[in-house]
Image 1 (cartoon, helix red, strand yellow):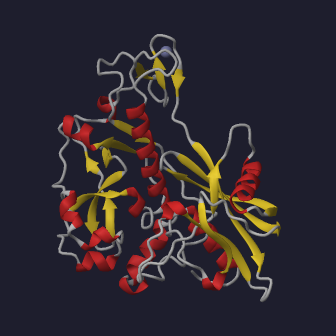
Image 2 (tube, helix red, strand yellow):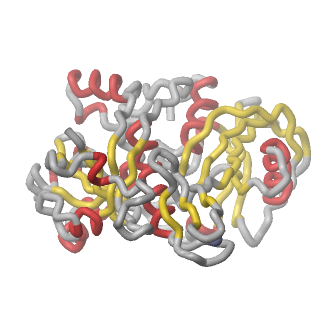
Image 3 (cartoon, protein in one colour):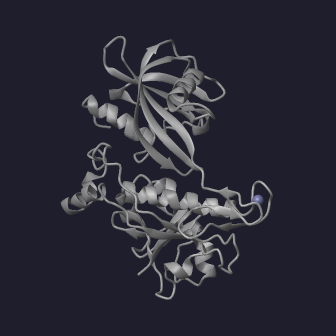
Length: 355
Ligand SMILES: [Zn+2]
């Protein structure tokens, strides 16, 4: 039996459940098995650049991360013990291999899909507030069998790591297929490499094009508060977070991050980015963990470092403010599910502080 995730750009077809939106796995008819769907055969008569489906490999949850013990604290009142146990198990969940296809491909190939709520229906609902928590689902007027395309960005905060990574992989591979239709050397149309290899091959010059990831470092910098000794973390407000500040919404802060440049080690990238953005020196630079981030195709490499010296001078074309904040008094930080949150939570956890 073959199942498929259905994606549309950076959204995933989901079904509403009592615990929030859950990605739908469409059961494909037996006639549409993995082999029939595959366009990887070099002799296949389908267009070489058919954009459609990818087979996702099994992925593993990053077990070295903090247990998600703080994750349920916000919504603990909304869950019974059974669902908490499930949530615990979900964090060690290993996603099975699966297929992902674009909505357009599913339509073209007459795949049976559930009734899908139009986006304008969703916009009139409480879900437009980027909040997919249990509370909102309960209060919403949507029926429980409702299906809709939900932005991956919003799903990250509630999916198990392995499933989240798998969908991230699907978004990137489907985009790569769509964007890799011609040879970048000679401009001839490309075809999928032989089955099992993720490459597009030029039929003229044989150039092979592979999906690319862009390494990007993100760093949590700490120091003791010079007055009180409490551990502090460096956070910055980026212009791209926006300047709107309403009574209900405070400015969002994040960690220092940036792309690794050609010819640079990860540690050099950490030192350079931090020097460029806030002009301070670091010591004790340590790698912690990584996270694939499909916007557009980044691999976030999470580091920790200690402040070694220098006063903060912000790079004004990127940042509007940066400072060291006491862990007990943080501004608004990135959502759970992001590596930024995980790094900050890890440091807070060490200090006995629950975010
Ligand atoms: Zn070529």
